[in-house]
Image 1 (cartoon, rainbow, N blue to C red):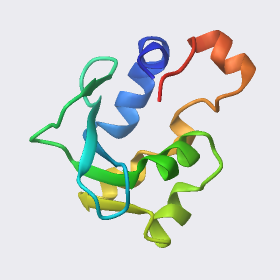
Image 2 (cartoon, rainbow, N blue to C red):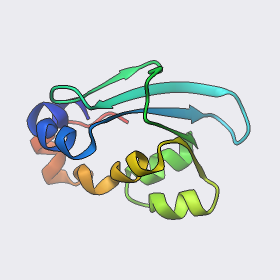
Image 3 (cartoon, one colour):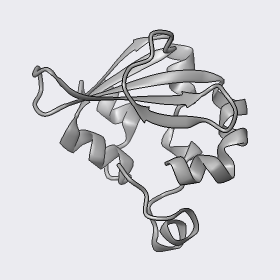
Length: 118
């Protein structure tokens, strides 16, 4: 995602204008295993491990379901409706952060943006 933001970040930042937390759990109801800050408010955006105090929204998911969303195998709206994704915070800002903002993990996009890390 970092490589993508370096190339396309200004457009995404302009659209979202928000900072997001992603909490990834090993198992449903378990403790947060990893937390990532996706800053789509400043500069070209950035991704780093940690937690932002001023996040507009926090998404919480189990790691397997998170990977399904990232890979395009699980629609994020369906994940939310099925209780597979929890969202806290500003729902309007949360709805701006959609998979459509980011390239699908196709061979062409992987070549263009580098091997995307999840």
